[in-house]
Length: 267
Image 1: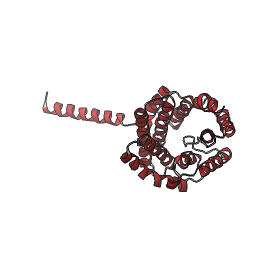
Image 2: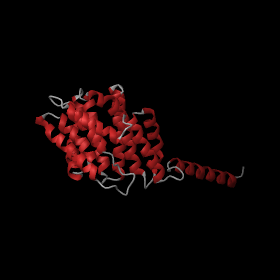
Image 3: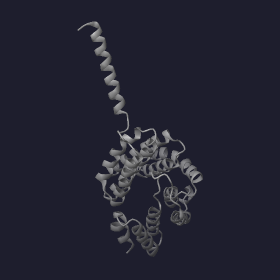
């Protein structure tokens, strides 16, 4: 082979390698908001149905969209949501704490990536707060790790309450902290219940938004959580718990946890 031919061959190899690298780092051909929305809709349905394998598969299917300049932040949010909901559904099915904690860690990583792309995304900040709260609970036997999570969580909870005071997803996350925290550390059960009731009223009257990929879940979840909290009062308020569980199921008839676990407990 001549020197010229060798140089040309080497240049072609570099071009091909560079093209392959760019292809591996590019969103799928024809990537569109409509296709990502189809995956997001499926993720939410799989969450309500408690379909763990489907949730994992859908999270993997959204990964290429995280490379899109226009869709990347939304794809990151919904991958984080899928990991978060996989963890909660797996917990309901009796999965081990270590496995569940790994899912929460994966969710936190995705929400952080979404915020790295769009630091003003309050929805990803709410998701991050949810994941940190869950990890603090599942690592409660390790004081050092719990302190690490709570140190980041506490100012984050205050921030999302200020940034999104009428956001039902904020209320879903913050009310749990209010309900379970000791009174001396910010706990207030009456405030938690009042927050959920207000969130339900606001959710029922919120107009639809133009961004179909923006998170809009909340009303059924607030009913579910208010039902569960009602069961954990002393004494339990079973009538309220049953009423809210039934309303959550009316809004999402496919919700397996409410149908098979929560509603029977109210009886």
